[in-house]
Length: 110
Image 1 (cartoon, rainbow, N blue to C red):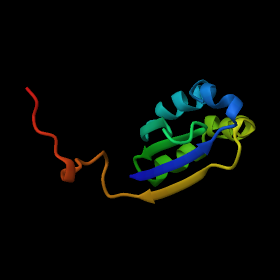
Image 2: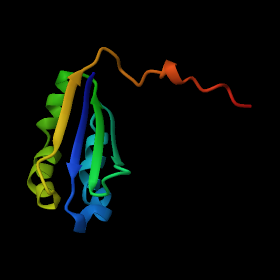
Image 3: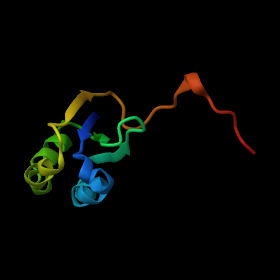
């Protein structure tokens, strides 16, 4: 799978509304057949920073995402709400879902 983590620094006046601002892009991406997940999280230390964790089935799915109309629309509309160009880590991982974190096993709860 293609695994991506991206940091988006949002202008302070839009930080509370970012999930709403990015909602159409988020919904459309999640509906792509090759999208495994597309999840936003907000930094607990930097209130204007959102982290996007996303994964696509393979390189073809990633290319379809970048080539989609909703991606092009996001390229046109989202930068006006950002304080800087997003930063990204992008890699190919030989798995298709999250793995268990064996170093922090949680006992079975009853």
